[in-house]
Image (cartoon, rainbow, N blue to C red; front, side, top):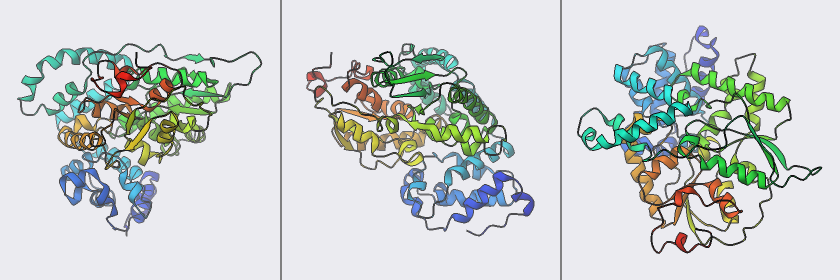
Length: 454
């Protein structure tokens, strides 16, 4: 794609990066075949290629963002399916991230849009605030039938509908903490030392994920540290264009993990939410212009691994018994497109004795995408229904995935238990049965007869 940026514009490193990305695009349109919003809406401007044209025109012309540009960029899920499909290697993620930050700098959103975005940014990255908000949401759910009938409240309805019916228990795994290997004999060699991202929304919505991770790793001889000073990864605000907050979160985490790296050392920084993993692996790029953090951030990104990536490097013993269960594996967009991790989770589940089924249209997003299912509820509902139909067509006993956002989104559309991959691996390798099975096991299900199901 030809570009006409001025030398003054290209002096801005963010603009220079976007210009290089734009020049990589050859207009082939392969991306339209795998873009969820284009498949649902059929509008060229709701495809990656269409958004690239809009972003190019906005950035190249130095124009404030228009209502049209904002509408179509806001509809982008950042699922990154287009990047997997693109034969030219267009780094759409960095381009749309820059566009979102540019929009927030140059466009004044309607007051109600600003209000909901400010509310999400003030609550979701902070576990204590989020837990308190869920208590309020439980009370608000009583009014859902009335709220659904009032025009203009779709986002509020979406928020309340996604909130769990009860507030999950608190996890014992809270930072700062160190969990020694369970069978770590004096003088023995430990298998590794890792930091585990505690996260913000995930430990509130499903504390069992981190608990299962720590149990499994320590049984395998790995020391797990929850560092002091760790915060939200920044993904939620980053994808809303709030670049300052995102970089503040990133710097805090880089500092926390660097202290561990320079102290007792780390073999890896593990993430159990693939949406967070995609962002943390990008810290090196996000902080590339910060002289005080560029090198440290690059080291952090190089150490960042999804939990299934790391487990694939360890020896997991064969389970004592075969589970006899069929699992539909939902590969989160941030896992398969953002991090290019596709086979490791399925291979681990198969080795643990599960029958693993791929989901038809598995490359298409479920509609979660961070805060997308709140900010774009109608499109998110359509994508969820599409995803659930495809999952249920495989007739599984349960669903496995590696991202809390997908678990929350899909879980509101099906009666099938939906479980994090690491919870299943912990269970089959001597841990606890996942909490998601409680009260969701129907008569005749293979889960009822499972010898470990009690």
